[in-house]
Length: 613
Image (cartoon, rainbow, N blue to C red; front, top):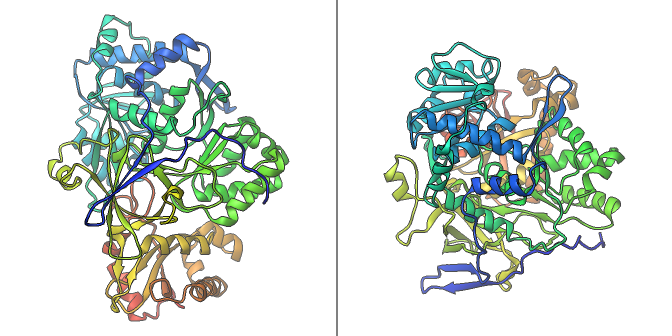
């Protein structure tokens, strides 16, 4: 593909590297961080004055599923009313806990909680909707001690509320339920506004706690990272500085599904739209085979200026673009860049998307990726240049110090971070907070990185695995689990949903795998979601075996070659910590919980679940 990239005014690449005697590197941008905003609510106030009738949030509503929106002025009026309601509860500093997904009301409540100086705590919906025992949700509730719980739909969240919310004020939008203290949203936004709202806003400082953002971990104990207004505004400045728009700044129009309970959607997307005075269309689609069609239909109506997704999203998007001319015209009409996260974007998918971009625009559209965590406000590094390479994590944002501690293999470094966007710690967990920082105050990310080109550091870094997941075989050979897992998922898609690598202190590598039942059923003419039929189907088993054989042929070394697999029959459990709050697989916890399956894999069990490669 010889086409040029669309010209985007990315921030120049200028980094400094300090090398310490022990080989540790300190990497910084030479460019100063721009001035930060005062706080997040101030952005809404500015927009309500400068763009009062411009749509802020939009969402499909009603039986006809038409787009309904709220303007910045309407949003400000409702935010102030909800702020007054929260202040009237007279529980200063108490938490506002949100159980439901992204919505217009959810967004209003978030800013209102910040104005009332009551920390906002969004919870991944799976803990309230998919859990059987609500153990994680109960632990979060006990940790937060909320004054208010918000749900979009009372009936949908009734069981969760019965488990945790009997002594707490509940706000609902639709479908009332019986509860000791419950109030409809319509009544809340009618609350008469007093001077108390303005007085509360004036008292917001950079150290005011804006959020408690839950993050995943291997312990299974909920961790709520403390997020201050200063952290949010610093991260927002870091992200927006990556592109230096002038008078040619495009109108910010986003169609996005990323949950606000996660740092990418809750920080970068939600706050970024407020900073730009743009419009956020809340996508009711998801990157799944059954729900992505809704995203595609939305993209025919909404032409975003940038698009974010996981690699699987782009796989499905590439296929759809090849078949649908109208989709391509709408998708690329305003598009300036694309972002992926969660895993490396396969090169075949990258090429397919760029072919469509050239066809519709005459240019390649830059793909960017970033690296961060909940504790760092999603702002550590960013790919702020056009590149045909995938799998990059970029260079440090202005204002970020990266401390790279050398590991004893393959020129990799453990990543540690210090910046004004880093959390001061975890709520009510001082010991865990202390463990998470080194003696110089750098937050320990638990990840590894490597230079893309050690001779030319301006080419940035590539992700090089989770340090805690790595292990050695009996031979002493080191296994980089993250890289191997990504290679396997790319090679075996779409037959597998996920994979866990086994082999610590064993002679060879194996894998526990979850089948994509819908795709397996479609390809091999099996009943939908029939795991037993899939496991016993010889054609499916042979297909899996052949794919692993091909992988092993391309990766013959013992640190990459998979000798046998075990097909798991039960999905990963959120209650036992096998999936994180971001929907990713917790490798360590799966291996702990499924020891018997691992044992049977290496014993050579005669079960049809076992496939010898």
